[in-house]
Length: 439
Image (cartoon, rainbow, N blue to C red; front, top):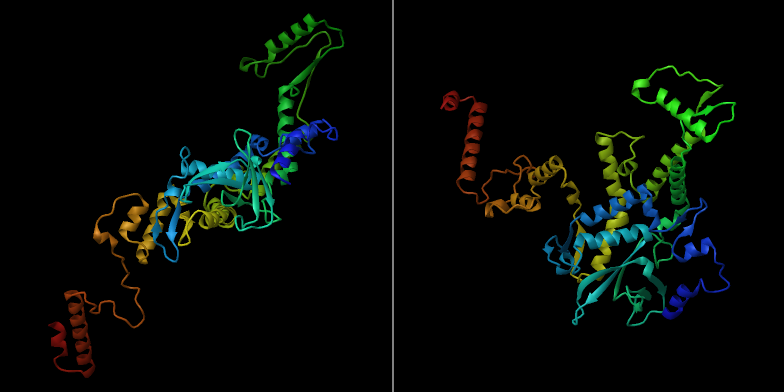
């Protein structure tokens, strides 16, 4: 299907007599499929569910806030990438990548247009909303070896046909190798059930069905009499001053309290269960969605859960694909991109101090390296010296041996020779051994 055929299908589907003009067809045309619960679910309407909003904001915010460094291939030497430092004329790097991650979490795909200079070098990155993109696999050509075509609608309604040279596509989990599946569409029933339960609770309270009780009488009352009876009842029973008072009713009136049925309490439990379902859908621990009812709210338990989320979901599902896609399409063949997960320690000063101390003790970081990570100026050339613990030396070696270290090594060797001489005298039982020891 070509570009114009696709746009014609999108614009004229509702005008076709073969398409019934129903609520479901309208919602499908607007991007929201009708769930069995009766609530239309789309990538944008799903954000009305607080658990979905929190999960999307968490994944996108944490991923975009991590430092994305560039290194020379085969080394750990940092390289400077002007494109990653300033990728957009209006958006900051965090804002651009956060939007890309929001698209991946909701639609399952992120599309970023690559604007090139006349020399062919990528100069700017512009995110494209996935709802404006249609991807199609075509026969590969020398101009388009990736065999992908992107039909894109711009902000002014004009259609464009772009290739992988023009668009960086970061797909999520999928089954055809072409695009990723939308988690929201795949779990529309669960999200729709959560939204329906929330709307049901809102209607329950909004219509005033939860009244405290009912005043009953066998007499027929006019509207004025009923209002007067209600006013007298409230005047006698409402307020802290009337607490534990005894109410007296006349004319055969009686009061029947109304309590919440047990099925309504199960309704509340179902709402809590949907939060867990959404946490399972996006791979986020429930406590990060502010749901701590069934887990400890302090101690190392939550720390281990957060570490597990980073290890088993955040890095392999979200960060690693972005690293490899940026390396493949935006950097040269001699560079690669890598997220600095140590950036997650920035809010924990104790954890940072422990990490720095351990890395310096084993000779992995210098003082200037640590100061650079803390955004502090270096202390001078002496801060570039790697330290080695004296108790950690190869077996059979002498860490105080003369390795060009000057007088210190020579004095150490002299003391070692004197100690060996004294031990030899004691072994022989010489008469001067004690005198030598005292000397």
